[in-house]
Length: 281
Image (cartoon, rainbow, N blue to C red; front, side, top):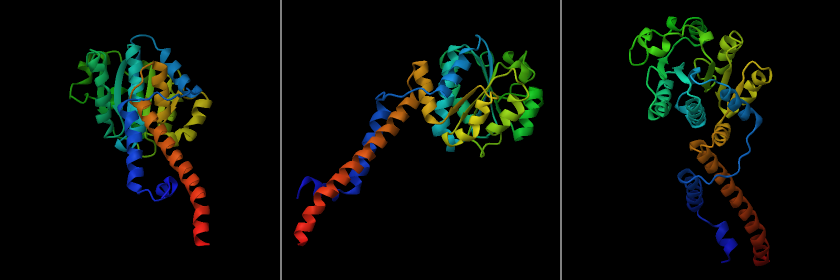
């Protein structure tokens, strides 16, 4: 039996095994496959670059585990940038599970020696969707009385001079979309359109990008990161290749492996087919 005949009869389990190895290697040790940074990612990056040291950033982790694979790398990359800019982070979420992702990502600030309550704070979950975003924009204390630890807002040092959305230097929503209580469109309507001096940056899933792109093109939002790839591009701009780049390498490796099997399978088919015809004749 020739190589190509063996290939056509290859057990599917071996194909799955090769796929697993092909995906696992880049996750363990990123390859660093070439990745071109698109203009939208660069625009979001440059918007953060404009922030002065000590800038106040409201960051809403509006996603659940279902969207975390695409959105958590965006949160991590942006927080790395905010950390470099010495920005103060006011974390909130309109999705109950978002509190968990806020806590996980804010560990970067803790690891960097930043002080809770002075450099970053997690105000936690707010219910009410669009009406709550409108309310907190007008008066933070109408929505948040305490942080997630139960500390009264007025006892938190970094909340002293913060009263409404005009006190923020940037607003970021990393948003899972229709499943979230406060969608990306809500942040556009209630913040970007109303508080025009406060730049809004949105992180969304790749499938949401076409729907949100008009807000970027119109200038209503100042930055848009849509899915895993922009997160990897953002890491490249930061020169801090992390999980997003590794995941993009794994995705590319999977595509290359599948393409390789398709090519080999077709070659094997056309090589073996004439032989089978000769045997039948």
